[in-house]
Amino acid sequence: MPVWRKGIRPAQLAAEPLCRRCKAAGLTVLATEVNHVVPHRGDWQKFIAGPFESLCKPCHSGPAQRDDHRPRR
Image 1 (cartoon, rainbow, N blue to C red):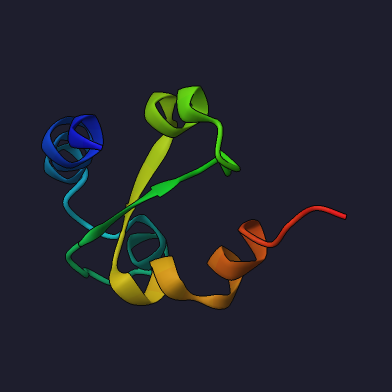
Image 2 (cartoon, one colour; image 1 turned 120 degrees about the horizontal axis):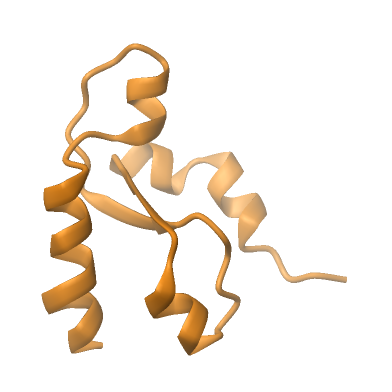
């Protein structure tokens, strides 16, 4: 996934260096992860098209994030 690691991810983190969710809560936390706002569910076009948001590791790994990635029934 060179397009992700060398292009999309660093560009997103440069454009939005702070965690969006922490910032909304009044905190200043450096983002280290890039999240797909709309779950891509394995669709490559959605994976590379976005929209994206920059998040810190705890926000990216939190309960809301896990809910987004559960299989649909």
